[in-house]
Image (cartoon, rainbow, N blue to C red):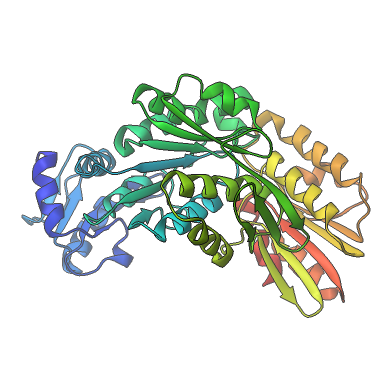
Length: 422
């Protein structure tokens, strides 16, 4: 079956599922495969559950005209997404980076949604499956789409750009994330830079933090470069206050009181303002959107429990974001501070050295307690409290009687540090 034929079917049944547990009547089921699952084995179940069509790439024991066989289900899904993308002549804004992708995506979406019908990535569906599903969720009334792109190896973002076809791009930053997959820091720079390579080749527009020399370098030669930063830039902003929540002042613009914790969120706020201004969103709408945004999903959240305050930033961590979180926490006012830090994953041969670097940073400040969990901390915890997992750390925390204390909880996704608070 040609993609055009499948697209005609999709227009009649525009809801796609890759998990039979989420399947609704008249959905199309794409039988994806992975290291631990094979959707082809659920073809019959999908038909019995009411799927309009089932896309497979293996022979099944169930004969039904609604079962369509292709050479590769994932490739078919991606090509269907590309064909759908080609039906739109609207801005597609792609966002990637080592840190802050999801927060930036959420803020940009909030700002643009005040003025345009805007579609965006749901949750963290930012990979080879999530991105095509996001593209296919864009309806014909769309005026702008905002697509988040995660990556942990080179050529990955290049592949995403092939079927996302972005017109605008943001790289939040380039830091020490997924060093193992990218092959070191230069590999991260090259991998994330694939977005700008695509936009350079297709007369696109990029938004860059002008404070970051590496972004200025990799944006050279791009058709249109819009800058934001703390000094010389198209949009200039600075931190007014940063204790519990970040307050940002925009030069020749509004002061914005966010519900975000941490000065490391300044670039995320600034790019949302910049994108809003670029698309002619009025300042009062930009201000309102950013002030009303409440972070969730363990990202830059402030939680109050009794007299204690908890900064929960445990969705993920790498050396760059961990360092920023600790330094920001050290600056916050408060007499009693406790660190609960999980290990950092996907760092390859650099892992032990990067964990040691975090220990060195911790030792520069005074804390009431430091709890390290998992990862390579087990080799270097020294005088600090160490646990193998978040469950053990939770048991420890429940035995404490902290009052008037601020706690920072952060770690890689695999550490599940949010469970410390359950």
